[in-house]
Image (tube, rainbow, N blue to C red):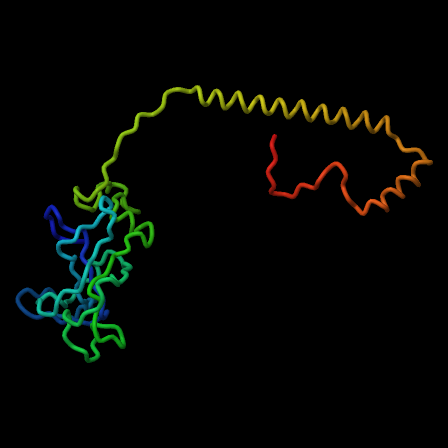
Length: 240
């Protein structure tokens, strides 16, 4: 978390972790609390700073933009307590800004860069939507932080909620319900009528033994075609 409290302060600081170390430290002096060695974990990091004169946030629809601190700054590199790290983050290079060697003026292999690199990307964008936890840390009300409902962004970068008066009329709902009931009752009437027609047809058109040969002959000569109806495949639409 960023300790900055100004009106345009960014909520987080960013680093590239160059090394993770574990050591045993023997503290001597008047403030020493023990004579034995104490385990200590720390990170070796390269700091990134927020791009100056650049505005980001939900209101302007821009991702946070950061870049490496120039090597001339005494805070370009440092050591960090792992307990101060909130979480890992995902960054993508700002390709339009290109690469530069002005931030770290060396082309020799260095732990500050990935293997094979001789310069740095000038800027990076912080992908705040890489997962739900990351997104909610910027929006406010993050996962596991029920009591924290305030946005981490400055007030001028937040979206403004616009109130909308709810509709009180229930007529559309009643109309929809009436229409649905009419359709259902119509379907039931049609189903009952179809069943009655099928029963009457089956009673009046009982084939006799003399008609079997004729019907078989007609079936063989029809090539399986339908005269009055076409097949309807699953997924087709039909009017009801």
